[in-house]
Length: 496
Image (tube, rainbow, N blue to C red; front, top):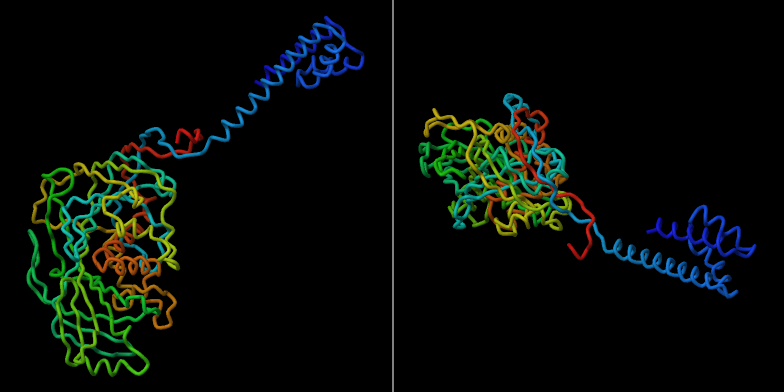
């Protein structure tokens, strides 16, 4: 529009100069406008003077220039209105197909893991999830929970992802916590440390179980790393070299193809809630507690086993949680959902003010509210590279990423990790503590739900993700994958 107005101004100036004549005072302005065609405002006074002198052509030129100015102002005003109505929004981008590395054959390197327990995760990574079981809200049970990691090291690629179709590695993070059948419980104080010893009676159970009745001798270190009465003094004990009897295998119908069977191999861990550490006061020493603990009472609940002293003071609550450490399978999958602004920041210093991490793991929201949880809905298809010679009774290979993280417990004191909310508590050595980020998420979930299985599942998922994304750049098995990412676009607000 500006070009057209300039051309009209130049033409009008030329016609006035060459046909009707002008006053000497107007000649410079008209000559310049004829050459540049900048603006009709500059020649409007000349046309007005011609009109006043009674020239009919002057009136015509004046009307043309006035109309031109009016159209210019109207165009500018309209453009301003339209531009002010625009806003930047996210819309679906085009579908793109490319090769993406999702796995590797270099399995040996994953045993060289650092202790992911000690460090804060670099992100609270988004994932895709599918639950295939009918949930009956049985205590201590998460049921089959299939989660696929997004094979993108860039956070923007994960947060903007709205569609993924192709092969992906899918892991089952099923976790089940049961009351431990504890016998011969005793407490010992050695070198300023407090230990609890007991025999756990292991009873075989479950479909297609490969586990014989046995008894494990367990000795755990009781850790006090809590600096707040609102924190549960919980520690997690995992045996880095479990006996064969502490591994349990289940075979259940897998996702997608009903003829496919998924195998779960469970590695047991103990959660010890040292209740008496919260109850102790300045006049009550460990020696007094140990004296009263010579005659203890054991109560077996649905998930927890409670141990009290002879005076009825609650000392310990313990539960045994079975974590699935079977190797993940590669499946054809579809992931769908909406882009999110960002992944949770995971600020462990203010966990109660940030519910996004809890929501990510389905705490406080319904499990199938994938959009509100900020994750993607996973639809699992047929598996790739199925070994047709594998028997139903064969144990699957371990999940090297998760199993390696569990074996990292050997680097902690006595195989125990304190899951308190205060990394700098004066009552605890740093070597005993999992990082405060892990502890904060664990504490928030277990206090909100009273379900240890959900808290352990979230912890194991995050440890697996830390290893997965740590080694992502080393993956060399590529598959063609179709993806759709949200992109930023400028559109009128009334269309949004």
